[in-house]
Length: 493
Image (cartoon, rainbow, N blue to C red):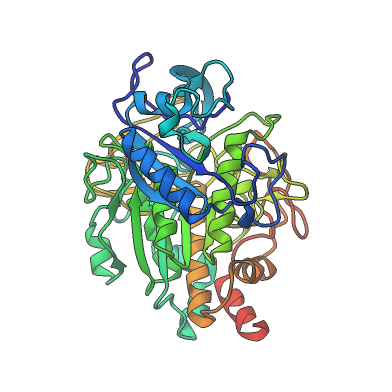
């Protein structure tokens, strides 16, 4: 699918009124991001000149686009289908693709593709000469899904084994050792792009610092989270870094679908946080080749890291996506800890050797994640009667039982690598409160060098990678150990 980073829509044959996408402005190095065959050592050659950025912005506004956010490489835009067709000279059509979606289910999702003569390199062929702009690539948003299951809510003290926030997660990550030294993430801004953030009383009771959410999609309330995913997973950050400051970016539409994930990423990137966590991604075939669109996204992620931001992405729950494979990104996988504190690779988490980047193993290291079939492992706060709070109260389609709790109580038990990414983000914030000047590569070194080795179990059956001594394709370097990582930072930097 050329010139494509598709977007989820509600109808199988009608285009939405507003479509999100990304444009790459003419690179000062003279090469289009669509021309690269592998990720360069630095994204600097693809930064745009100021005059070209201004010209591209002016042209986009004339065509009816709204500029959502910009970076050194390009812009996230929103606009009607006609504007995208005018910009590209192509035609927008809907297509169905079979992907791994929520809760590791395989289903067809509607995408938007740009087709027509000369695509994907026929950029601006439909524009009058007077309105040509220095735009070298156009990418539409691909469907993203939260990297977690959708379990039922649980009461304050349900039967069975599970972890609570903050104490259960903190114990597994050994964050009390860092907190005892006074390193609790203070003065560190963590940004999170997800489905939204609800002002759950849990956050206020623990005196956590949560800034007013930013909503990317028109008509989407910044105070709501229809799915509950962003609200619940954000609690994992504070389990590791209770004194950090959280800025959430709602990238979902009114119904909760993640239609503006890359736009949200660029907005978060523009805020220049120290840590940026993302618990979402797409899904590709294991033998897929890296497309021009994938490389464009990878450059934006690489540029964020080069800007000094520690970028974390979920490895996936049986998913195989581009974002966690970008070498500079920290890919967060899953380790399961039982009630005797024994560790094994999570069968719910993706773990593999990258097909896009040489010697790249996903994940780098892990957070705490449950096991198949439902990964209902961590009790998390969610908006009452949100999708998470309702849908899993009953048995699922495979007759796996619900947890027997009532709907609408504002708590749900779930995990997935969506939990691992914010856990790693919290660990990074704790390290930064000890050593504020560390760069992303040094932070990655602190976490991977000190991770607790996990030698048993295997990753999701799609990959079935075994855990073993040292770095492996199931758990990377193992389970993050916040106390040891902070001490490593103090001793070596």
